[in-house]
Image (cartoon, rainbow, N blue to C red; front, side):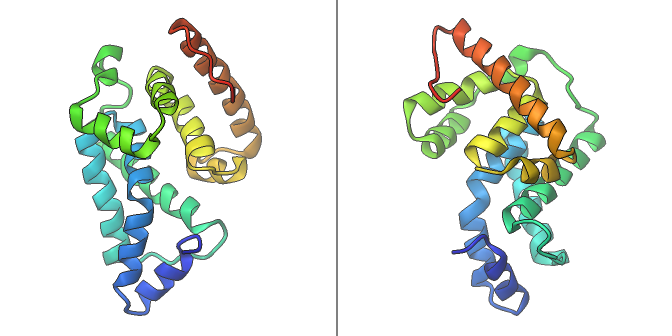
Length: 185
């Protein structure tokens, strides 16, 4: 499948398998991305479903100004931000509360990240500021360019470059606390 745009066009033309392909391709990445905002895997699942529900019912127009993936992640970001506004949970609660992983969340991450090294990296990322987590997740796990990440996070490219640099430094420090060095930093 290409970047999802052709599947979405097919869906808009009446082929329901197009939406099925989109869900299959992007559900895991969207789930973990949204979880970076809401810090609750069960809420993230609901918001991921809401994102796909918006695609299915509202059928927003994809103009092609960015990749389909960037556009879809921007919709998911908006859904997560709307949820946080409605529930006024923006950055409240203790760090310990946000860093606890449920058994289901661990299994999803293990399946998605596969290698032990990446699992440890992902857990260390949870200790970072939400903005750092999001930019690193988009650029390294979802392979977004800085311009695409800027579009999703509603920042300019220069802000993303600075954010990536600071996030990498914070992640490196976090990993070194645990005695772990990740060679790609």
